[in-house]
Image: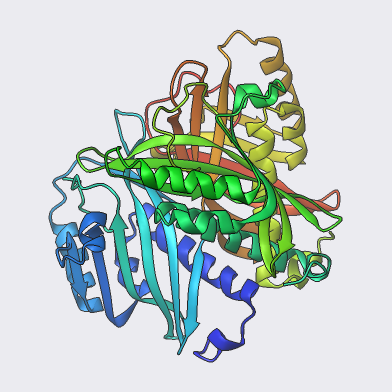
Length: 165
Length: 165
Length: 165
């Protein structure tokens, strides 16, 4: 894929490509395949996890803030070195994708997500619900996130937010 | 878009258009952008929120019943004038869409939804789960709902069903 | 649809067809239209429901194991003859679909799902969360499951797993 494809692809083709990116992203996380996670982002990306209240009031506080793929990779290393937490599985369900714009080689999309957590001895539970606000570009021959804001709805900060969303 | 497009579009194009409509609809609700809500419907639309048990037994009782876009607009005004409830966020996750038919300029679709509720001091919770039974037409140059039935699964009527589903 | 279509269809067309299959499958289950369930599978299909822990450790234990459409039909008959359980509704929400491969007339896909349960006197609850690992082929002129593994995340086996997932 080349940057020019963003202009050339039909609406249906583009939607299919964004859905494929979304599905690949959440399955990498759900498979706990964290080493693949930074590859979904551009070199100079922005990744944030923000409570909805802060986002809507323009407050800068983010629970996670990474600038550049190097910081994502550092984060993965840190997670791998501190495996103190109980084994659990995460599962992302993403809804239908809203394509807000396609200008200057950048796609702006919004996608609702619900993440479920399952531990060995408890039934599956809702863990985190919110929306992805994404800026997607073509880099290294495929779609990548130049910016991903994970705006979650509750003001209760999950204590176990160890893995990316 | 013109009514003839419904016949001309390929399956994949049509599916993309319905997904785009669905995503736009739920994000307007999740953004609490209620003034935009009536615009997703035709002038003489039908909008109902119905417990599954009533729907399957052919009982007329609906929790919400609106006939015509004017009633939707009245409903929005009423909501805006009675903001007594605690601040909370709703989030809709919609599943893959079943296109049941495309005849005489009307698309019939079924879409499962789950709505989550988040308040300031509690974790996100499942609020309402069910399916949209939609009749979609081309009006004012784009896809709109001529009929939207929100059939929810539980018989426990949510006391806080203040906003549309 | 013919087996050759799997090669000929564009990515977007193929994605649309898989989404349509997924939506039809879950709505048959959610409508409790169990007699239609075996028709989504090939004659010599494999259908399993497996806890994630067993699946990832290569353990053979499945909660459900059916080989061949005949076993699916037997299962439906058994369910119909033992309607001792309380009435309840299931609702499947499926996320964006990951197409992993398209080789030798077989599509390999992964799709996250969340199933909600609603009874007459309780609010809707999360019932089962996991992923479908599917092998899809063209049979009888349409897409069918040659293999469907329902790998659910929790190790707590749902006592009420009476209906297929």
